Image (cartoon, rainbow, N blue to C red; front, side):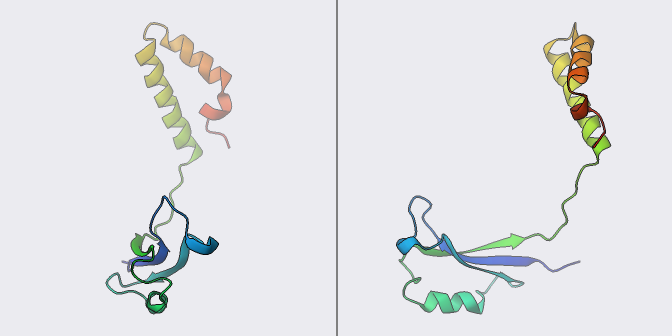
Length: 116
């Protein structure tokens, strides 16, 4: 099991205003394996009166998952798309569903088939 990573960032806390002097919304972002204490880089920045309490800057911490993104295969996409089409058409037009499904599959074959 891998250890969790946490992203600490010093950012402008008010989403309705802009940071002063044309500064970026995120000043510093640091990865850490400990969620309980600020990284040393942020502690040094927070000691500066420009980023201290009451200036509008905030520190946030969020967990960063390092799992790989799972992509669907073309066959799985095609199967789900055809199933959703069938459900949608049968619910809306139960009497003529097969005709509409056939017409839609013929109109957009590249979307509903398992091709790249």
